[in-house]
Length: 359
Ligand code: 57M
Image 1 (cartoon, rainbow, N blue to C red):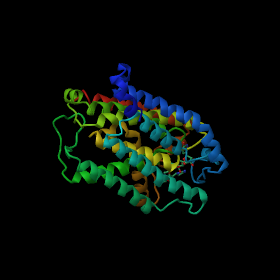
Image 2: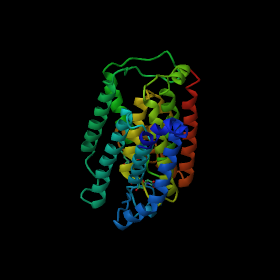
Image 3: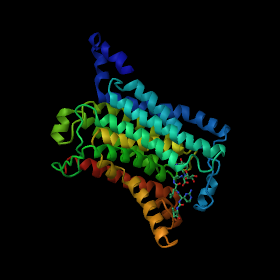
């Protein structure tokens, strides 16, 4: 909105030209979202506490988690509020992609909210059923994938990192892939969200990396120079990513060990869904698996553990899945697991960025 109101004034005062720049608006979107989180956070945490929105802790998990009982959850609401306000303020709302990514952020947030709410009010200890939740996730992801697929100028090729000339065209299969990526990323972030700051750290790093990829893919000169797919209008998503980085850091302020609040499914599904959508719009579908490698590995640790458990009648590969529990049970202190996962995530982001040149 600031863009719509203030940029036209550049004809009177040249200073207002600055609102044209995506870089400037990305930085301020980030600062705005961060400040919203820092100011609203303490109030929201008190509110969640007074409403007794505290986490139930599973008794079959690592013993160290029992002390976390009562920590308020659903802190993801804070992230969503900060991102939506900041994006409305700083992004050019005439770009449809902004609305698509906001739709997923809020839509997946609502699914997570319904799940958290049912768990907390005790109407169902497991939240909404896995199938119902998945069905809603698929409906939103399919809708977004169809809109992107039928957008004029869209092509259904996918970019393979490190190979600039390998661009397989999936045709309508692209719709299935895009839906899978959005739903899969949302659930992968959800599985990772099991230690203080464990999901929000790598998510921040992913969104920061996508600031670059959105900016580059939306600029015809840079995209041509770097030989990455050019997507008209996707540069504006850098502003959204900036807002996400700010909101995520603001949330981390409270979620860092020892956490004062958890994000809940409202946060994890929303963040993951947004990440998946960004990867599709910027046509960096496969790259997401590199930069979000922590989420991928956590998910595979569950798939392998459950598969092996069933095949062998109760034997395990890891002490417990998802992978972070394995390290906890090996005796690593919680902050050590968290910070080491962040370090790996930074390394993966650097690797992902290096694909711009190594091709
Ligand atoms: C949700 N949720 C956390 C919090 C957070 C298929 C199966 C492997 C699924 C998996 C599962 O349910 N994963 C998804 C993970 C929970 O956190 C809440 O949930 C939200 C995210 N969805 O925002 O509201 C607990 O995680 C801890 N936490 C923190 N700090 C944070 O900032 O410490 C979360 C955020 C919180 C808190 O303790 O209560 C969760 O882990 O439940 N299931 C599992 O992860 C279970 N694994 C398991 O059963 N593995 C088996 C194999 C055969 C499948 C095995 O390896 O033996 C473990 N979950 C827990 N305890 N809690 C088992 C032990």
